[in-house]
Image (cartoon, rainbow, N blue to C red; front, side):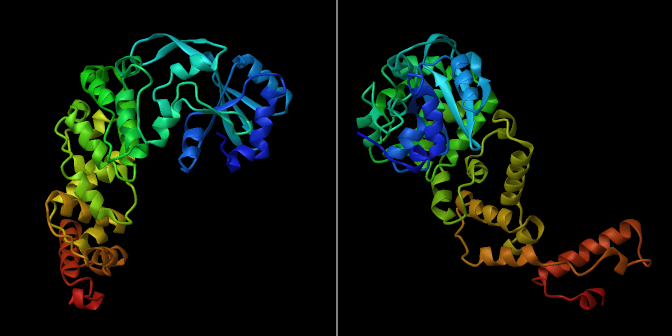
Length: 380
């Protein structure tokens, strides 16, 4: 089988390949770029595997006038930049020792060794510079069937890196067949290795969960995350019940992982998932908005149209309220409204606490009027 794609035929990509092939070395595209091309999905990163050692890759790239960055040279990875596009070139490797978080690797000269250290069969597909597919582990049938399956022994693959538990669910959300369900052996291995997640950093867990929640419809996978015990292990108190309702209501609101995280609930996700300050602030606003008594127009006025829209969606999903078709328009109307009174309009007659209290009262009156009262009417 052969694949064709613009990213393969791109002269700058071919130039990177030639620095290896002209030297008589292996050059295989691997992982996501091959998988996604076969699935007609977007390709974001181009990874290359080779039997060349990192120092050799550096020398060949520099001799060809390309920038070479030793981004992970101890683990065999060199980033070669061609016309502004980065290509990660990694030497074939095999795992020597693993502790569930990271692996000690040894360089290898065979593609078979490199394939066996990967996680899922669909990620162990390779393509040469002409797009000809090499499938050392017979992963093509799994890919075409949209079946996410660990390479050989699922339990062993997970014990090499416990984050693969979450990757299993994330890959199913993105590439799996929803009707077929998750691979039974993989699901059982995930449930049996929950304790291993304690050894994984909160940053990695948070990042993986957010990637899962960004899938077009992560609800079936999240339901399995909950049923397997994984959800409670990483976010105690979370509930998968409301996520499918939210996703059904989202429409064209975009794939926002923090909005969807808010639907899951749970205790202290900001800390347990190591959210960024901006993400934590967004989640806090969403949670506060769900429980507030502010109507759609006031939500739009105080929090902006997008935040108001998300709160409206979450209220409908979590509180099981009907979604008011006019609520989004009300929020948009509120978002562009401008309070016509300034503090200077009340001075010098009012100062200090009294001034602040009066401004607040007038603003409340103005909001209650549907933002219709004018400055003169308010001052009267």
